Image (cartoon, rainbow, N blue to C red):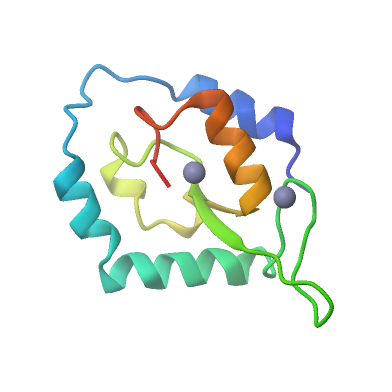
Length: 110
Ligand SMILES: [Zn+2]
Ligand SMILES: [Zn+2]
């Protein structure tokens, strides 16, 4: 399992490139693309629809909201945007926790 520490360390190593130019509008349209939806699905499948941080998974008893998170910054790693290896499945809680620690500005924003 992917530990929080490892995830957070990777975030630190790929942080805050000055090339970020705030192309949010562009980001948003790309996000809604079929390519993005397929990427998200592939990431979930790779991680067996399970949060790689705390292990949460949907069952018939409880629904877990899953998010596909970019390990390397979305804005600065164009080549890796749709690479399944650059995606990790997180539940909404872990994802929220991650971004509340690292913010969203220089991040993958989702
Ligand atoms: Zn989780
Ligand atoms: Zn994220």
